[in-house]
Length: 323
Image (tube, rainbow, N blue to C red; front, side, top):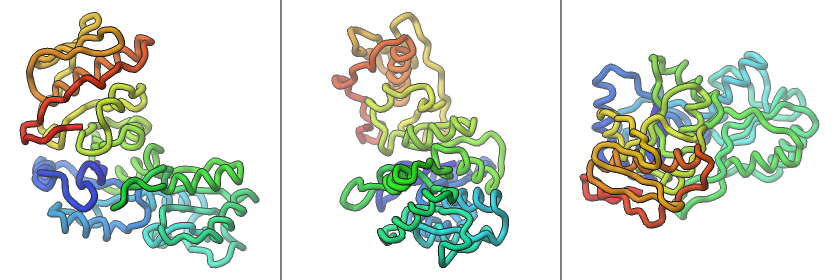
C-alpha cells in the first residue's frame, strides 16, 4: 500500500527508481495499491498521473479517502441516500459510484460530507457548518492540515474541518489516514494478505497503519527528517525504516540495545548528555535504524527527545543526501 506524495512522487516528478520498484513488487505476486488522502481527484486521474510519470497503474489500483468516505455513508444510510457535498469532483464521483445522491438542497440530506476542493465557496462552507450544528452527521474525507503546492505548503482540508467542527461543536467521522476506514477500504478493494503500508509521514501513513493493525515501512524520500523520527511516540513508530523503496527487497535486522548504546550493522549509537553519538560504519539504512532506536529508547525511559542537530546522516549510495 503506497502513499503517493513523498513516496511515489514529489510534486511533479517521480521518486528515483520508483517505477522499477513497483514493477518488482508486482513480479513477486503481491497486490499493489496507491493510497491517497486527497479527495479532489478521481482514481482515474490519479492513475493517469502515475502512468505519465512512468509508474504502471490503473484506476483499480488507486484508493482515495473520497471512496472511503462514500463507503462509510452508504454503509450507514444505504443506497440512494442524499448527502450534502462540500468538496470537488473526485468526492462527488465517489459518492455517485456508491449509489448515493448529491443533494441539491439541504432539505432531505441525511449527512454532510467534505473533502478538499480548491473551488469550494464560503457560502457553502457556512451552510454546511450550520447543518452540522443543527444535527446532521458529518463525514470528513481527511484532516490533513497542509497540502503541498507549487508555492509551498498551503492550508489543507483539515483547516476547513476544524472550522466546521469548532463552529458546530461536533467532531466528524474521518475516513482518511490516520483514521482506519481508508486502510480497510484499500484492503477490501485490492485484496491480499499481510498488508504493508509504505509512507513518508508519521502522523498519517504510519499512525494509520497502526490504527488498522498492519505493518508499516517509513521511507525517507518525503517529509520525515531525523528530528521528527527520533521524537516519535509509540503510535507513530514504523515497523521498518528504509532510505527509499529499495528497502522493500532488503533484510531489516533488529537493532540490539546494550545499556545506553544501540548496535546494528557496524554502527553504534550511544546516548550521551541529552544527545547521541554515532560511531562505526555500515549501510545508510542501518544508520537511520540505530539513531531512531536510540531516540525511542530515550523516550521510553522517560528522557527528553534527544538532540540530533549535530548529526550528519551518511551519504546515500546514489550520492544524494537523505533528510
